[in-house]
Image (tube, rainbow, N blue to C red; front, side, top):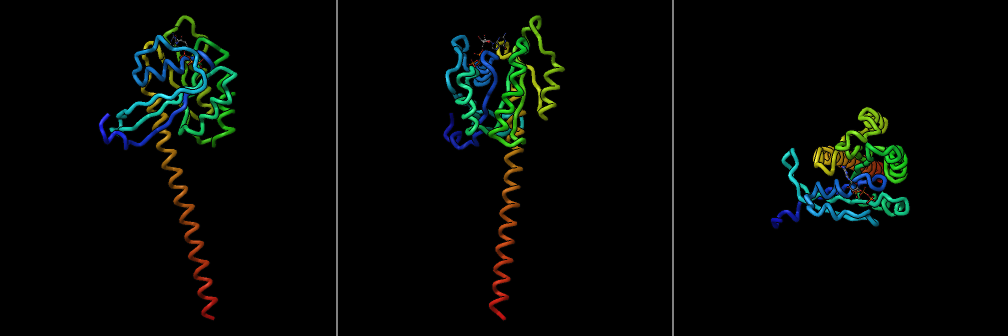
Length: 207
Ligand code: GTP
């Protein structure tokens, strides 16, 4: 890492979904962790980091909070949302239960975050063509229901790993800019109100 890499803007992503959908495989593939065969069920939360140049030419330090999908860790996993600028929701296209759980994950997230919170939906394990149970159309429909974007990936075969993260980062950057604008507008309104009060007070003291 070059010295000035320490000053890169940080983007923090969470990855959520039921146990065994492939969250750890996907995260490790993205950060080029070669130690994939050692993947065990995640206990609590792990985070991985990498510096990346995105297709817009900008370089960021990306943190991925890889959460545990097991039910017993759910509230701990959801607690990590406080660190995250946006999330990836993942299911396994060969496992209907993991697909059905997505609505529950989204409900849990919206209990802590606003509805404009950046997220993307991934159907993982697309290499297992013969075992597919959830069609691509069903994935797209689910994404549309929650006004987000759908991707199919294979963490194992390294298919489509970069695109969902870039899409999520773009949503995060847009969201941050909009929030900044809203804060600026709010601050300007407060400033105008303060000026008006001062003016009125001056008028009163003149008379
Ligand atoms: P938890 O840590 O329990 O929440 O699970 P996880 O979602 O992190 O799953 P993990 O990445 O540990 O993957 C579970 C299993 O699914 C692994 O043994 C992998 O072999 C397998 N797997 C992950 N991604 C893929 C994929 O894209 N294709 C196939 N065929 N198998 C995958």
